[in-house]
Length: 217
Image 1 (tube, rainbow, N blue to C red):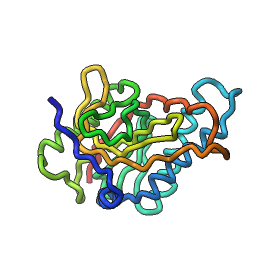
Image 2 (cartoon, rainbow, N blue to C red; image 1 turned 90 degrees about the horizontal axis):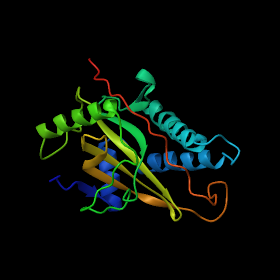
Image 3 (cartoon, rainbow, N blue to C red; image 1 turned 30 degrees about the vertical axis):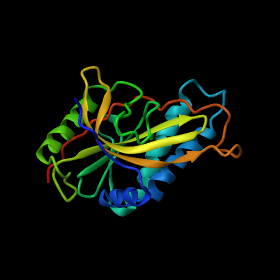
Image 4 (cartoon, rainbow, N blue to C red; image 1 turned 30 degrees about the horizontal axis):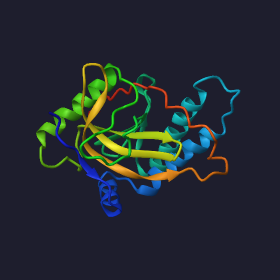
């Protein structure tokens, strides 16, 4: 049986945990909003799947625009894009989640909306090996090992939900549904008007496989 993840849902707990990762809530929320605005610029005449691809690209770009001036590093090795913390202990990638994304349910964890490939499996396996070394607390200080966090997003008629979560295992079919930590982010509601409030629900993000390369000092 999978271990129950540690869930952060109270505002102060969310702020503190993000700070430990070198992040701020306003940064993550701005990234989510940029994805919504990027999606809203697309039209019914765009090619199928373009809105999801564009939203992914905009969110990745915004993460980099905000965090790189603070010392974070971008990498596009093998055309797989992510951003690394200055000490390379934390990597962040973006993916679509299922209906449990952002729910804060401690007994029923979300999963990725699509199965992932071998590159993501290798990254999650590296997470697992690191987490097994530190069963009580995760290593937050400088380390040569990278822990890959997923900014998991889910769009629905009521708004969008998201969480920044640390996967611990991936099953043989490529689904990530086991998490060591889940930082539940505030819901961004659809307000019924403006560029970011289109009538149809945004398309899911495309399924990107992410390679994590171990850096040497």
